[in-house]
Length: 455
Image 1 (tube, helix red, strand yellow):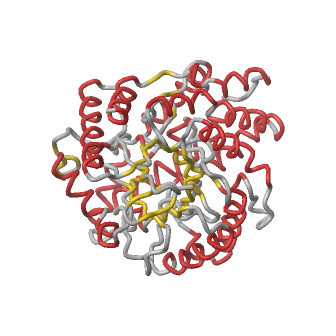
Image 2 (cartoon, one colour; image 1 turned 90 degrees about the vertical axis):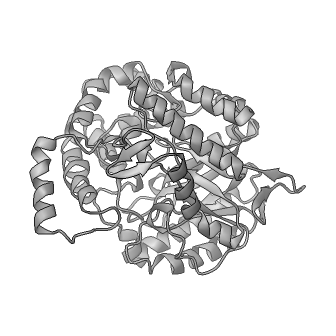
């Protein structure tokens, strides 16, 4: 097993290991921009279930989990030189909200399969709880249908998260290819007062169930604020996320200005130094749990996005930093590979409508529906000039509430309706569109990463 030794991760024989790989986003925690649906995962599943019924919905989603990652995917990543996959999971695979604290062991079925597949190829897994009961942050990727992070306000939700981690840690306590546990992805505790005591409690509970595996702990405010930690826990990596402003869907030229802020290689280095200050001051390992640009389909712009990634990787290489690129597989926005075939044929027009409306925050340029929303933004700016809501300010908050929640939820019946009239074989074909052999490979990205990992 791996463990922390000073600023490094090492094996039992003290051989240092720098974990470098990808996140398996959209698999056991589905996200709207990754698999093409609107809104949050549980709302989408409910809508699809209303069309297909319980049994046939289960057929589709289980087949999707099976096809999304197979032995061929593990072989591809290992062949590129990767030695780590960060695996986001949703608590709902184990626990239902109407039966809290009753855990279903079937939740381990696909996770066990993929962790074992990766281990057979010499690749470690980091288990990342991406969606916690009550939602630990304000956005869709914690399966949040609102903009409120109720997790930090209700002890009940925290009790359930601790209980789930006790079970997960006990289940994997002896697994040598589990690098460790990332128990809270991108927490967003508005007060900053609940998260520190919760981490103290959670660390103690996980250590009691599994004293050996590494803990990968995210800072507050989406893994950017580490002032909330009251102690440096043993055998722990404090995980930072390092998205470049110019790499977002609304990013400008690189080098150049994005929303009035300059971004170039020097700014990337400065931002990383600021975000990693806590790790340097505490002498703990440096690991970037998420980073990576969004691609546009425009050759000139994407060439600049590849340069952002190349610059970030060179910065990390120069400082012996481990990393996990977001994300491995999707429907064409950011993945190393993306689905094709029947799924894109059926949902392509719908996804184009989503793009036109800008209802996926991760794929939004912030300019969609400008003729409709510009007056609202101007009204907020003029009437409430001092309003600066957590976490990212007034403009982002207004877009989140109107486009990424209200309009996204209004699209749910339309998405679910596209499953109408499909037979079982059709559902299987849709899910199998995510098999690696049926996917399109983003070859410039694969070549860039392979060159870095094997160079």
